[in-house]
Length: 255
Image (tube, rainbow, N blue to C red; front, side):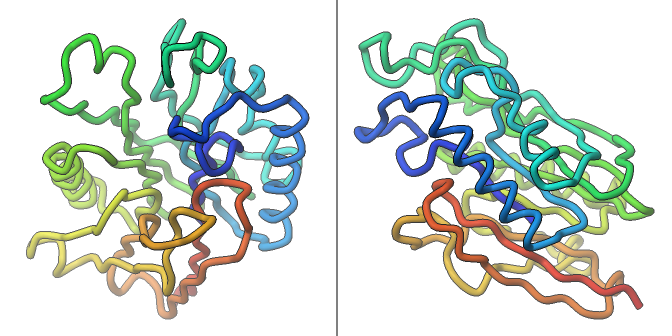
């Protein structure tokens, strides 16, 4: 399963005109609901993006730990992609600023997780140095679980040139680590070069996943090694607006 959590904020989490700070009760209630959904769907592995580990905007909660306890998937691995003492965004009023930030991606599993490689990806070259200092890093988080090599990912959203570079790095890692599965928030299509396309296949969900209040774009998807699994099925559970993304559930059977 993959799910961009939008740090349990919901629509408006990216800091658009709808963004206003929310109460600690909002985040606790939302995380409880997310954990209950994960427990009900009963995936073996969950790939998560936009998870706060200790950020002012979500009242310094460790959201990965909260979800692990609530869902019962107690094995976890994280990658920190946004670590700043103060992020002066969004808007001009300090009341609305994200403030201190410790955030990134996370993996939950029913069984132990062996880290392989964590990549922080390049930031957009067209941005100024000061802007990129405060800007989120995108990532590839590669692990091994029960003999399967898996990559959790979050690619660039706002620069097409930079997202193209991220797709190149992802495909290099598919080949280098012989990954069985890559999933997460691609922020667009997953176009594979011929060398990769002969060995891996993109699995796009049957309906859009973003934004959750009026889905239009299938941003969240998977890449699967051909021949590794005998049966593959993909679906989009309905979870409302707990996040600004809907999750994607991938069912796999081994030969």
